[in-house]
Structures are given as structure tokens and as C-alpha cells.
Length: 472
Image (cartoon, rainbow, N blue to C red):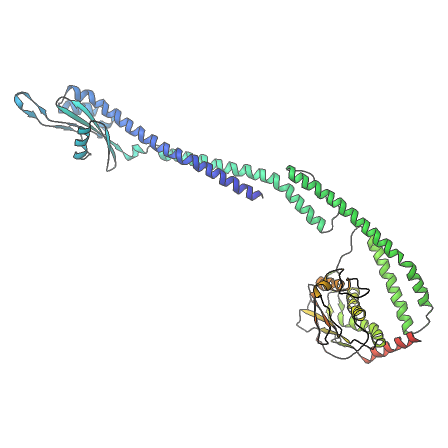
């Protein structure tokens, strides 16, 4: 806005300067021309009295010489022939160097008025004067230098004044623009800081009326946002705190389950759930929201996390007669995601398979990477009915139908992928159902070669023990 104001002021001032300077320059030129020819007219008039009293060449030469133009050789006098006594005629008399053509001299005698003739190096003024026996013509030469005398200097003064006006207007416009732009810049900076999470940012109400109104509205909005966030944090803390009572009951019941893999898994799940609830309560009570993604330095072995979570979900898969396949987890694959974040994402993906497909539906988990890969690809496929509206499923809070769908699972996975610079895509799998493709960008390129195999015998054996313990 500042430069726009300067440009507008520059254009307007330039147009005004041109509108006044060009006519003034022409007036100066015409004034110099008129001054030069007026001087020539005076020089010619000074010869008139001498012509009235004498036609003698010497006396006329003396009259011409005493004038300034005559002394410079710029005056010529043309006296016609005169009839003497007894009918004899005296010849014409010419004094000085003539530059005008004869035809123009004859025309000046015939017309009887002063005329200007353009000749080499300037102009000549032809002034007719009545004398005894005819019309004499006084010729005064006006050089070009005298016609344009002082014009260049006047034009330079006009150009300097115009340039000074333009520079002054630009400086004034810049100062005015600064007074207008600074409040706008403060408003933009405060909005950016508020978007970055600095909830205490406020701006002074300065500048033009419109910007003062915008500053007032921004400060009111910031206060309202702070109040809304405080209310949401309190609500989240209160709702999370209500889960403590049923969690206490679950923990007591889990403690009475005795020994066995199923009991240990149940107690571990309850402990994990209690820790997550405590984290939610502590985070909600803080003044600042938690970072949405893990720190760039947090990494984990994606293959190990997938093996661990598949060991947990394989027991339920066998209970529901689901064929589960996992591939690409033989070698470590380091990804720039915190272990807890990746585990939550894998659980969300597998939980969707169990929640939204009927029992007996097969699924597969594949991890693809390579020594020169820039990303690790996690594919979760199933043989279910598929997702009818992938775009709606990716929108937070919409989900993809079915009872108990909150629409947050895929959003959790998407945020984990985007925290690394990757993405999340939905498509049709080779099994006939949904394929969820999670691309995790590898910042350090630390990936190992992939392979493909069935769920290991150790995983199946642990899952079978957990299932038998749960049935017992």
C-alpha cells in the first residue's frame, strides 16, 4: 500500500508538472522571440529620422553605424531611385549587407508593413519607411542565438522546479504511506503471531479510523479466542477426569484376572489408557496447546512397531477367523516419528479394519522401503466392502460410516504422515476392499531393504496363548 500511494502521487504530480511546464516553456520561447524582434524593430526605427532628412550614402552609413545592430553589421538600408531636376533620376542607394531576397524586399515595399523573413542563420526584419520619391526598406538581421537567448536557461529552471515538486511529493507520500502502512503491518504481524499460538499478542489502536477499528476488532477477537480455548481446555479436562472412575474399576478387575498373556495384555492396556487420560488432563490444563507432531529428532523403528502391534491384534484376528498377513518388517526401517505416535496410527488403522469389516474378512499390512528410498510406505489393505466416499472419510469428524465411528482415526494417521512431509491416500486394494496408503518421508534417508513374509511363528504362538488365556 505504501508503494502504491507513492506511485499514485508520483503519477499525479508528474501529470500536473507536465501540464504546467510545457505551456510555460512555450511561453518562454515566444517571449524570447518577441523580445528579439522588438529590439530589431527599435533598431529599424532609429534609422527612420535619418531617412527622412537625407539620402546621402555617407550620412546613412553614419546613422547606421551609431546603432548597436548597425555596428555589428546586422542593418541594411534600401533607398529607391529618386527623380531629380530636369527629369534625371538618381540611382538606388543600399547601405550595409543585405540578406533578404529581392522578391521579399519588393513585397515589403508593396505591402507597406513590417514583415519577417527566415534566412540562413536567423531572421531579417523588413520595415518599410516612406521617403521622398518612394518607400525605403530598413533590413535588420536577428540571429538565431538572439531569438533563443535565455530559453535554455529558463527551461532548465522549469525542469528543476518540476523535478523538485515530484521529489517533494514522493517524499510526502512516502511519509503519509508509512503512517498508514505501519499500523497495517502491526495488524498483519499480530495476526500471524496469534496463528502461531501467541495468545497474549495485542496491538495498539493507532493510525487511520479504519485501521483503528480493525485493531479494536482484532483485540476483541483475540480475547474471545483466549476465552474459548480456556473453556475448551476445562471441558476436555473435566470430560477426561470423568473417565477415572470406570478406569479404576477396570484396573481392579484386571488385577483379579490372575496370570496369563491375556491378563497381562489387559492390565497393560488399562495402564496405557490411564496414562493417556492423565496426559490429556495435564495437557488440557496447560496454557499452550501441545505440539501437534513429534519433534523432528524423534525416530523409531517402524518394522518393530508394526510387529509389536500385529502381535497385539493377531489374537483378535484369530478369534474372528481373519486371515492376517504382514510383510516388509524383517529389517529395521527408521522413520522420523515418535514410537507412541506411530503405534497410535497403526492401532487406528487396524482398529478401523476390525470395526468396519465383518468377521472373517482378511487384511494385510505391508511396509515398503529401500536403501535409497526417500519415504517409507505403509499399506493396510482389507477384503471388505471398501469406502464409498474417500473424501468424506478423510475429513476430520466425518468418518466413513458404521456404528462407533468418530471420524478421528484417519485424521490421526494423516497428521502423523504430514508431520514427516508425507501424506495419506485411500484406494481400492488387491483384496477387493480398502487400501490405506501412508507415506512417511525419511528426513535422513535411513531405510533398509524390505521383504515379504507371513506372520512369524512366534507372533502366532503368542497370539494363540493370549486367546486361550482369554477363553479360560
